[in-house]
Image 1 (spheres, helix red, strand yellow):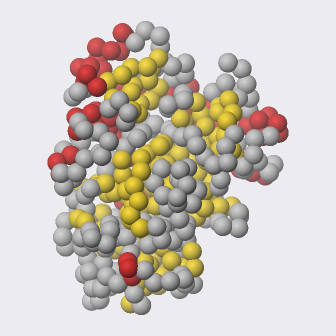
Image 2 (cartoon, rainbow, N blue to C red):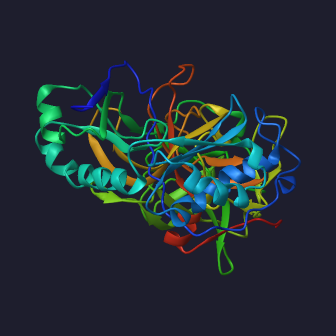
Amino acid sequence: MSGSRTRRSGYVVSVLILIIAALAVGLPGWASDGGMSDPDVGDDAVLRDAARFAASGEVLFPELWAGSWLDIDSDEVVLAFATTDLSAVGGQVEALAEAPGSLRLESVEYSMRELKAEFDAVVVRMDQLREQGIVIHWSGIDVRRNAVAVALDEITPEAVQAIGNSDLIEMQESEPIIAAQVPIQTCASREACVPEMRGGVRLIGPSGYTCTSGFEAKKVSIPLLLTAGHCYRLNENITHNGVLLGPVRYRRFPDGGTGDTDAAAVDQNPNLWKSTNYVYATESDRLRPIRSIKSATAEYVNEYLCKAGVTTGYTCGRILNTGVTVNMHDEQGNFVATLTGQTFTSVCAEPGDSGSPVFYASTAYGLVSGGGVPCGNANARMSYTPIQRVQSRLGVTVRTTYP
């Protein structure tokens, strides 16, 4: 190969990922998710293997590991290694797998260590590139293409030269990620949840901006409600259905800078509101209980999940990438912030959906941060902050029991 790999498209069509090395973790049984399963994968053991190797692959094979993903067409977990001698790892992989017959090993050119080094170099130059008029919307490691993906407004010779003409980089043209808050316009069926609060309903700030409630949480004995950090400022009073919830007590968002969390926690007046572990999923499923927390290190490419927002409701899709660096803009195109370590999905989200709970069955995954393409388009995209990081950065605990 020679030169940067590029692909032109009106919308984002390739995927971006940075697998974070992690120790193997205990994974909850899928039966705890209300008996639900991935609609396209029949064997739960395959899903558990996908999560297991996503969490521990780089620790187990530090020199050769190049990532993994779920192939939903073949019901196989694909493990990529930077070697032509796959027999060197095959035995160890099969010994660790719950469903070894559903594993597929692939030989690729670059290891995760090499891809991470190139990705880090791109991220370091983002601010300098923006000053030169070269706007990177997001960047990450695409394990399925064994490349560092860089998404731009337009691929120009100047951009190629500034970013670097590396064999490891694949450039693509894309729409920007928009901070998904919107002035309130109409009421919705998710408007009235008094007195029991839950995720997936409308929140309104003092300026009239709408976002969506995420998960119920607590800090010691203080009842809290999570949403996106970019939606509201500290101490702003937030309401639902005309009733005061309380002020924003905790907030993490890198206004104009770089950070890894887009989350806020709103006080919930216990005299007016009752805490729950519910999510308003659909009109016929308004009491979806949250019973467990997804480990961010166990997320894997092609994992199935959903979100519930006030603008676009209940929509589902798959994880495209983890560890993505996203440059967020407002609807006028102004730079808002750079978010690192985000999870990128094919789930549909639009302005007003920020803060929405991301979940599957009864497991919490994260809080919606932004979206890149309108719903109804095959290239719809949504990014979220993993819920484990939200808990850590805000010092809160998501409620997994009622009340």
